[in-house]
Length: 76
Image: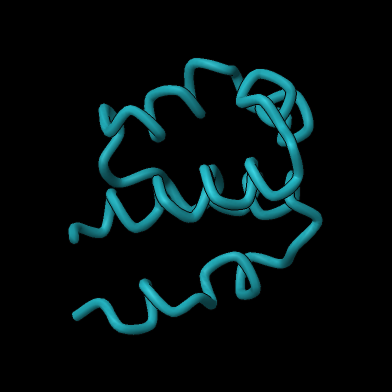
């Protein structure tokens, strides 16, 4: 699994758990829907730190909490 695929899985899993559509989630993050769509579709493979921070805030998490999960921790 690539870094990009790991982030896609993290975002989609958290959105599903919270019953959030990507367009609603994008608004919660203060990002354009196209930004979230591009990440989830794998077009954007390496999102900037500020984008990841906004995504974490959208999930009501710190960036550290957002990035602290099994698949990413095991990635080398």
